[in-house]
Length: 357
Image (cartoon, rainbow, N blue to C red):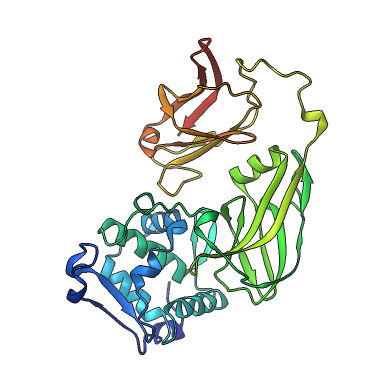
């Protein structure tokens, strides 16, 4: 996809190089990348903040007919960015806005992103592969809400919908997702909406931002009564602004009239995802694993979650639990039973069959 004329001619006053004088930093040697304007901002420092984009970067690179080399992609980005000598971040934000205005976008797993965002996400993956950056696991960064600094990003004058009833979608769009709108003045073009700690697909236009619940997030939230935090985030500056809380009201007709013993499992009616393709982690997590969730009111202490015969680490939630399935377990087509096992009474509960196509 061709860059805009401004993007092609924009590399004025910036420089990029391998700097041997940085060889003592973090053991990176002379391969350390440096990209700076008048502020002396480092491209590596910027890439280090983009852990939430890892899934996008991997998908974008995999979709390229010819996988770009690190230096090649760095040079492409250099030509796209303008000569803003105050801040590298400002140059990136300005180019992202120009990309959207000119229709210079890329489609990644159904997301419409600017070409600059895709190239930056891809460059981060190449830098990780070359050992120029530490992985999120090494840095203790998973892109969660806690990794952002709270500040005001834009002026909020209204948003909605702000509530629904358990099991019911809202403001349903043509593709089936539940849409949300936000009236925001002065919002950066690269800003995103974060719902319950996860960045959601976001569209930014003059004065209005749209987002909403899709896929596994929609299934999980609509099935679970509670209050879910909604925030505006700037993934480049790593800042967040609290917008409010989206409420799912409980539907009394969906509540069970009986409560099982603390030593027994309850039935699991809601869980997901339930299928994928071999070698593909749907609901991909920052470490490349597949996130999985299930709803249950009864989870005895010491219960084990089994993917086939492989135990999965899980985290208890108010609605049940969430877990991660390593990508290595998704390599071969087939049907894999997902089970809960209670060693105290030797009880096994079959949740369902996970299908790998």
